[in-house]
Length: 365
Image 1 (cartoon, rainbow, N blue to C red):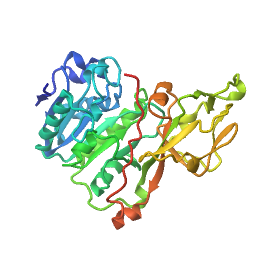
Image 2: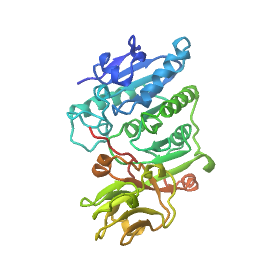
Image 3: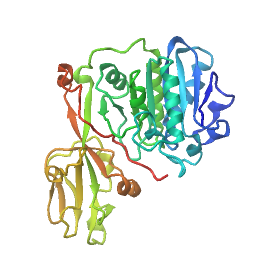
Image 4: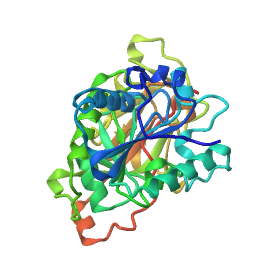
C-alpha cells in the first residue's frame, strides 16, 4: 500500500465535493504545489471522511485568486480517506481510524500504519514551515485549535485560528503529534461539517498562514490565549438509559437520566457550582462517572449526586458535549477541562505537562 504523490492538481479535482473525490483519487494522496516561499505549508484534510470543512476550504482557496496568481508559499495538500468520504462516514468498517495510525500509535500495526509512516518520512524531508490538520466535531462547539506540545511557535500558529486552544496528548498516533516532531503543528476543530462557517474560518486562516514569513519564538501574551487541558472524561453508567429533554414534559421512567435538550450549547462555557446537569428517577449510587486521564474516579470531586439531581460540585468547563446517543454510549458524554496559566508557561513549569486527552467524540462507522 502506497500513497499517491503528485506535483499538480488533477483536472477537475477542485470541482469535486468531498464525496466525489474517489472518482479521481484511488486513496490517500499528497499534492505538491509550488509557491514564492519554498518551505511548504502542509494541510491535511479528510482524515475522517465525514469531516469536510478542510477540503471545502482548500478547494475554495485554490479556485480563487491562486488560479492565476502564484501561491505565497509552497503547499502540500494531504487528502486522506476518500473512500469513507464517498459514504459520508468517518471511516469504513474494514478500515482503522486514520488519525490513530501515525507514528507513535499504540494500536496493532496495519498496512495503514506503514503508509502513514512513509508519508511522515516524505513530509519531514520537505522541511515544512508548519502543518495544519483540519477536522470537524459531532456536537456544537466553538471553533478552536489543539496542540500536542507546549511550544511557543505551535501556540502562535494555533492562536492565528482561535484564542481558545486545547493541549492534548491522548489519543496516540495522531497526525499533529507525528508532524509536530519536525515542524509547528496544529489541529483545527471547525464545528459541524454541515455549518459552512467552519470552511469559511479555515479558508481565511489558511490564507493568513500562507502569507506568514515566520512564527514567533516567544509565548503568546496571556490576553491572546485561553489554553485548556482535559482533566477528566464524563461517561454514563452502562445500566442507565438517557434522554435529552425536559422530564416534566415526558413520562418519567426509572433508570433514565434526563439532560437539557440544548446540552451541547454549553461547550466551552463554564458551569458554575450548583449547575443542574441532569434529573433522574433511580436508586443508583453513581449514574455518571468522571474519570481522570490516569483512570482515577473523580466523580465526587466534580458532582453532587442527590436523589433526583446531579449538580456540579465546583465550576467546570465541558468540551465536546454531544446529543448523539451512539457517541455518548461508545465514547463519552463530554470532557471536563481546566485552564493552563500562560504565566506558568513563560516560567517554564509546564514544558513537561501531564498527559491529557483530545476533546473528540466518535461517529458510527
